[in-house]
Image 1 (cartoon, helix red, strand yellow):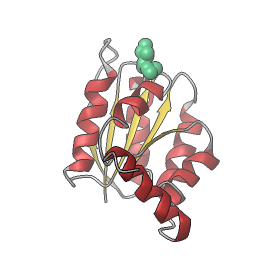
Image 2: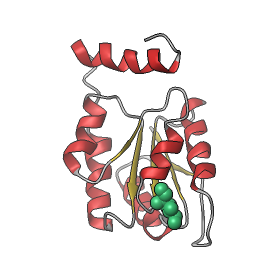
Image 3: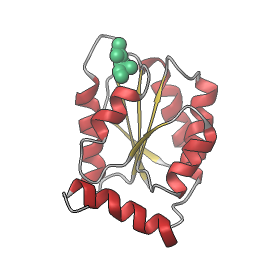
Image 4: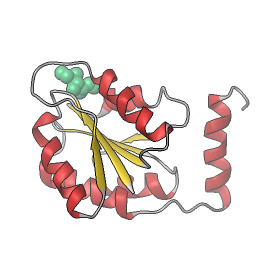
Length: 149
Ligand code: RB5
């Protein structure tokens, strides 16, 4: 499975450590930048990462900015992306199991590298339950995107 990772300048400080951790877990990682601490615009990297998922090249993604919030707002503008901004492990696990989230976002200014690694583990190790009300509700998210709810 390929995982896409992206960040802005405020997430760059932990991106490489997160990336190395994901690679150690046995995943291939596609890095869409940014690649320095120079100020940049998070929507550009959110958009690049979402396109990797929507094209089918990557299955899941990780986006890091200062808070995780800007990245998640930008990612959720894309039809078919379900991005969750998390700072606790329970939410990172449940958003895969219940929401079939395909993008995890967090903030370097909110979580340290230790929690970031725990969030990534919770997200990547969990599986969508794909049954019952969860399926109905995830389908309703697509209905909202299509103006059909
Ligand atoms: C950059 O200063 C900061 O605004 C950005 O990384 C992110 O936190 C936005 O949501």
